[in-house]
Image (cartoon, rainbow, N blue to C red; front, side, top):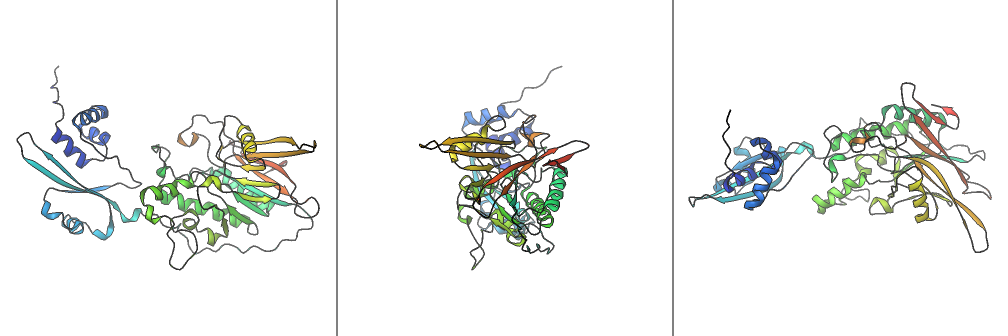
Length: 407
């Protein structure tokens, strides 16, 4: 059995492929060749192609008639497309010559459906309950710290247990420590086909999660921080549409219309968005004079290792998310007069589904659950606190355990 060997791709063929495909890998699949074969040949002949990706499938319009290039909208109409239904993502002219000396030129216009623009979470007009003043009777404030849901890859079973806990315990405060959204489509890493979700889907599902929280704990004060996954949205805007960063509604001092709090309707949900005006790792929430909450940026191997290093860096008792692990660790320091002061740090765990490691971690050493603090607010001991972990045990008889109670 014999097969005919394919001639190496010519420069003209490569330029044509560059105009028709967004990556050499796509061109290689079309030709039935290995990507390295096409990529190496293009490198040798000096033909370049720009990688391009989007949440939505990208349509393309090409034309070899320069007289059509003056008005791209007219070009779209001539191809049977309504210009008002498409966004022009990129337009480029490819030029190449043949071995016979003739010259060729082609315009390629990459389009994206206008429906791919992200919008605030869809709402049916639901209004968040207005918190009612609670009688304190001298008891400490109960504060719940929920983190790393990675919606829409959150654990549905654990979510229902968390809502049951909120309804039963009615905490005074609920603090969301970030990575509520996963936003893998906006990551600098290649999305995993089995673990990917569109940006709009993520926003809509995250709104539903927050709405469940607010319904379960109507009288709680809710506060939220960004995590590194929310910063994917911020970084994507800065990188791709920088002039739109920070854009607001007319005559408004509210959040940017392309920001997490706006897209999740946090003002309507009664959730306070805490920010330092920059990247996520500089934001924190003051829980008391003795305790703060952050998303966290340090991730070390093993439960408690990240909390200890965070404690060394911050030098104040801190509750953090980010690591997907659970721990409570302590460190005692002394003044020059031998006065002892004990600091504590906690890792909250994750509310995401850990089986499959979110598509990027094999059998991860993660723990599912959250953390709580009982904070004294009155008298000489005001600011003092104690911490507890709510630990989720998955399985057929799954259960959430907190202070000896089951939910």
